[in-house]
Image (cartoon, rainbow, N blue to C red):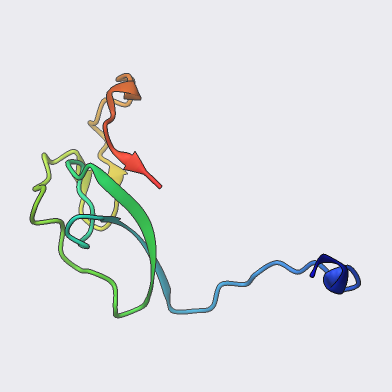
Length: 88
C-alpha cells in the first residue's frame, strides 16, 4: 500500500462544517465535569452532541459549563500529578 501512495500528494484533512468536539465522561456519555475520572474527547455532528453535564459526577464548580475551561479563580499552580483521570 505504501508504494501505491508514493506518487500521491500529501494533503491536510480539512474538517467539514458542523463538527463539534466535546470532552465526555466515558461512564455516562455526557459532558465531562471536573469530577469525571474516565474522559475522552469525542467528535459529533452538530446537533447530536450531548448537552447535559455528567449526572454521575456532579461538578465541584472548578470548570465552566460547555467544556473543561478553568475558571479565573482556579489555582493552576497546583501539582497535577495527583490527577487520577484517565486520558485516551
